[in-house]
Length: 161
Image 1 (tube, one colour):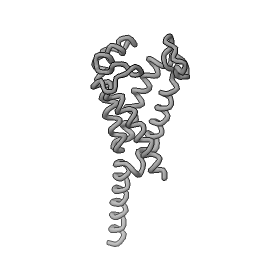
Image 2: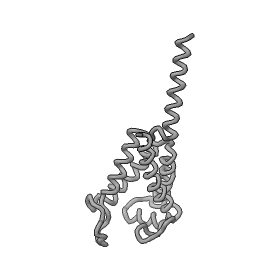
Image 3: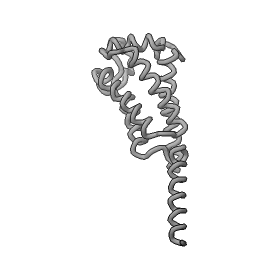
């Protein structure tokens, strides 16, 4: 059942990151909680955080989240995608969320941003995927099983020759 659990974890993270990537790159799902989206709005936000070159970083973060999310969904290059996404989350914690403490802004105070609570949860889930991999229900897992079967087959052939 661990394969199923990892598949659920990968799918949930994939939806979150792919949606955020699409929001940054294409302005998908704009709204009061997410803002207008798009590369220009994201670049403006990054400039306000002191991150430069802001447009290039907006493109890089959008692509990282969209492609990383899709890779997690199918379980291909799971560990590498998780490392890239963890770097993005870590940068967000450092440059934006850490100053607001641990908790999210549950009271929706306009004078306070969001704390690290959500980002730490994402980071923990990504670290699990880095350590464990995509699991049996992933392309990575199938490749490992196939490689192990080939190695075992060669060992049997050598033993019988």
